[in-house]
Length: 472
Image 1 (cartoon, rainbow, N blue to C red):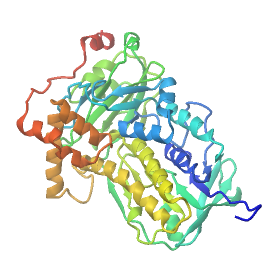
Image 2 (tube, helix red, strand yellow):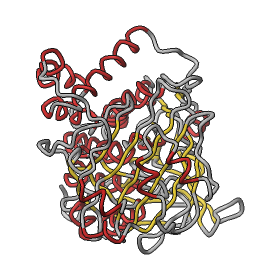
Image 3 (cartoon, rainbow, N blue to C red):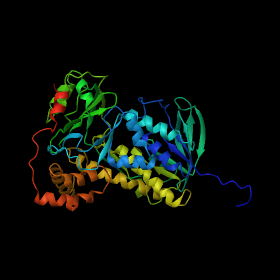
Image 4 (cartoon, one colour):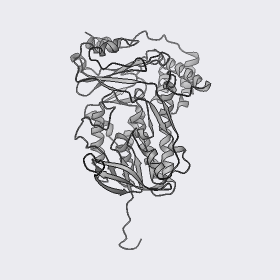
């Protein structure tokens, strides 16, 4: 290199300061100077913000996501726990009924630990950690409205800056070696690509018609002295409508209670009928635990729960310099809790791919899109395998192989409910740590075929102490 020559550091633009966008920025920072473009003004602490419509409902990060969090940002999980989050053993710290109405035993022999807290807390700690990196710049109240480039390569993004960022606001162009769309379910990437002359994107939707209603409660006084378990009653796809719910103990001595129901069985936003709905579930345990508690705020409802996937990785002539991540690629029914885990694993896949190649090579964006598709596909198959069974969920009925696999998964769940080795295999898959082929391992097949066959539990496995503290 000639004396005085300065090598330009690559640049990247991330659209959206969502969890996906922040994780992507963290993954890119070792390889580029990153600008995060966010249309809203972000809160300073663990407070709600408009751009996360699901934030009020129950969230958790599966153990596969916990590992990805800490690999991307060492110590991040510990920071969240230090601020009030919990790492809970699944299934030891959970009282859960499976979709086939089998109660799981509370095994503590598996290594799976899920992160539980409010979404506001998680986002706040993640924002503070990522945006403290001097290689990452945040541009708030700035809207991306069009890509710069052509069908062969994206070279930047057109932006509008200023509060509201509507028509007439100050416009400009951010040029970049890589533009990442992490703008969520409302992503305009298909339209932007069409405007550049790129081919259309194949999409699929599986919509079980699930509606959610969430209310925050003050935890029972006596329950604050113990780590009260998560309580989960999952809906049964074999019944229409399917209805379920979850109690998620979070920081601040609070319980998030989320109730769910498919078409014809949607939960109510009527405060006088909310607990009655919980009591009407196939098992009334959630209603029994909640009745008499002090509510903290109104009931929040949502119906935007469809599984929707865009198959960007299948585009043969994908433009260099452009990548789509997170809900902009695939959004899942929130009942499965996989969105945050997939976001972290996709960001990790991006980092690992860049570590092997660096930025700027032809065809890199397509390799990144394909790498990100692997964790997306794993979560998609788990969600759609259940939701496609609900009436009206999809125009394409499950074929014979899909129905056979669904029956096998039911058997795997029944086996896992009674056998710790089988449960570990089941959780490896559900946590997105291992592929679905793990269900065909000896750990699952041997107890499935030859036992020992312990009887199923007849009710929720709350301990006497837990019942006493929550249901005096």
